[in-house]
Structures are given as structure tokens and as C-alpha cells.
Length: 170
Image (cartoon, rainbow, N blue to C red; front, top):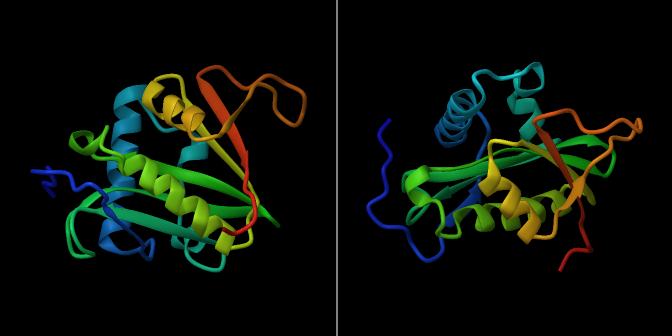
């Protein structure tokens, strides 16, 4: 699927889509291909995402599109419940030609709202040391970097973990 943007709107359309639909599947395939390109492989923790993880009541997947809901995907992101009140952000990805235009920020704001609607107040996410643009985004949007896991051991090499406490619904 060739999806190069000709122009990025000021504000993309961001909406929930079922994980098994074409938009989310395309976004996840692109995200995974880019991770393989950057890291050489996907580790076991990156495999096996399913619709049951990202469809209500367990989660949500958002897709940003140019124009209306029928426009081509510019990117996407999912959240899934991993414990009561705790969610994990997965597969934030934005088409390279659309980066730097606020698409990722719109997706993250939207997924935080979707997480609140699911009753999630404590969010987690992971990225890697070869994704400096992701690290910069998370740091600039109020995510706190985690240096030590719950077990007291340092975060593994190449991994970068973040947490965020969500406030009440606006």
C-alpha cells in the first residue's frame, strides 16, 4: 500500500478503529517493519499482538488520517489494559513523511483520552535507544522515564521505559 502524504493537515482526523481493520493492521505492519529495520529483529515481547488486546473493553486503537475518516492512514497507536487501572501503550507509529507535523502528539493525546475512558489511570510504554524522536516526544509530553524496574533491576540495555499518571477526565 503506497501511502505518501502530499500535504499534512493542521490537525489530522484521529479516531478509534477496530484492531482487525485495514488501518490499524497497516499501521502495525509499518511499525514492526521499522523496528526490524532499526534493531534487526523483533524481540519476543514485541510479537503476538491481537485484536482482543486492543478492542473494548480491554483496549483501544487509534488511527490518524489525512482528511476525513476515509483518508489514508498517517499513523496510529494502541492502548491495552495489563492490570486493573493500568494500561500499556503500544505501536505508536507515524508515516515518515508526516513526522514533525503534530500527528504523534495528536495520537498520544487521543490515546490518553481513550485510556481514561477505559478506566486506566496508570500508563506504561517502552521504546528503544534507536528511537530518539520517540524519547523526545514522550519527555516533552509529560512522561517520566523509568531507570529501574519494579524488581529493582536496571532497565535492560537498549530499552527505555516511561510511565505516566493520568489525571481525572477533563
